[in-house]
Length: 288
Image: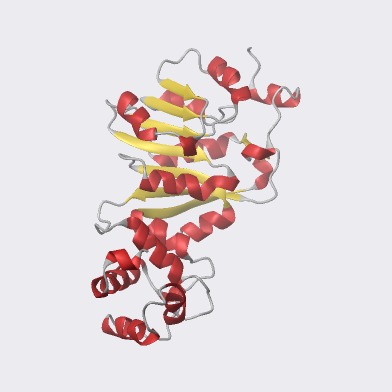
């Protein structure tokens, strides 16, 4: 099974599957740039999601201490195992990353690494669920270097008072320090997708406020529920057990104008607003 990746594609032995959002990255310069920006070294444990034909894997496996690789497409597993049969520092799983206990694999295999980095060319249709799984359910991750649809990358890394800034921006910035790295044109993939991509890096924050996340995230989504409406109206629509005047009083107390829209608030404003709101009524009522 000695065929290289391009030959497999040219001979149509491997067909990209739309149901898995498969677009194989083939550009060596972009691959090198991803690895450099990720900060991987020979003491790092790498988690790679959706390696495809292993274009990124073939370089990561040479520089990382260990790799956990998850590929949902069973047809690619024999090729990947053949490509990397000379290496002993990886475990390849034919599993759906959204349905497994990654912590268990980390505990069993990454017991002797200094840091853990996620690196992936994410499937477009499940980008956000994968990111949130690692932020909410997986322990010990230091950073994530991820390629995704350009529009989503801009949203995650956007600043207040910009058109891309929304609830996802706030939620991810709550747990990470996001950095937009570079744009990736659609021409460097096979098959060529309809949109451009971008690579971002999410460094896990160690200073997040110690509150139950789901309540805060529901609150942030409520703030952005209708972009053109004010915070007061959006919050009242979701938490109508309170009066509009109560919301106005909360905003005024922490120095936010009652006519403000969610897109004008920074992360710390949302945290302060949520904490103050939480002191008025019990959390049980808040997140019902």
